[in-house]
Image 1 (cartoon, one colour):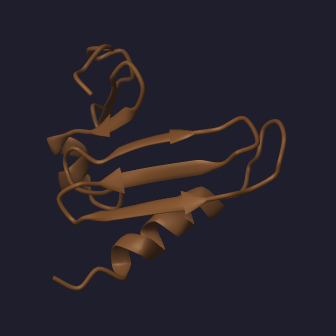
Image 2 (cartoon, rainbow, N blue to C red):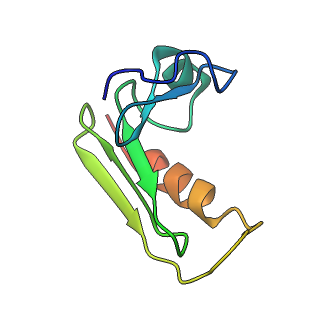
Amino acid sequence: MGNQTGDLFGAGLEHYGLAFGVVSDKGQDAGGIGSAGTFDWGGYFNTQYFADPKEQVIGILMKQTQGDVSDDTGWKFRQMVFAAIDD
């Protein structure tokens, strides 16, 4: 889960470890993608999952779309999951 990419991807909202994308403190503060330490990855047919250890929640979205997909279902799904958390 440690940062293996440094500042390679610019904005610093997320870094990449050896297996997952990991939300940084800056990403948490920007909102909408989870707490710092939330990790995520996607699969070939646009399947996506994330886990937020702090909130003790996971999200799994199974899609069967190949190639470049320009819809926002993954982002919207993640937003809906985090909006449903009532602390």
